[in-house]
Length: 245
Image (cartoon, rainbow, N blue to C red; front, side, top):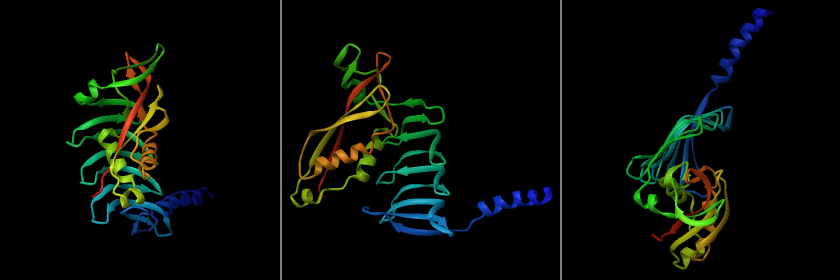
């Protein structure tokens, strides 16, 4: 019996990990994007193997690997011009190890270790260094510079990319030639949690609601602002541009 159990133990991994896969291409709903991916032949709803998200023109936006439906190994994400804006490893759908987030010039503006939850490095431009924020401390509310502003674990460039990829131009706004910038404000508390979303600059025709929806998609993944060595509650603004081609 022991021999039979040993044989079964050795055979099972082969059956599990040796499953056949096939490559498929499918369009993503409500987006001008496609997936070129590998799925299990026995269950075509389960991603397994290499994966690419591309535009209808063939521009690669994302590439990596899946293991039985979960992101695994090295992943790379790009903007609409093919610029790399973030890269790092996944294990069972969770970010692990060092992730790098790049700016428009290809510099690593932020490096974060997701295994140890540590900020390794970050770069601020002069505008960000000198900017004053509405902050809440034990002494009350004030407008002042921060030791470190709130940081999105995706980088400032990444914020722009994600907003650009996910914003849908309202039909009524397009029909009426409405364009401009909507500003969305929200607070980031001392734990990096977000709340109190509000549109502070409006252009109407559905753009305000769409901007609010998209900014809320970035509600997670923030590091709090630091003031005099302490994490504080900060009001933060993100602009969303609506530009007619």
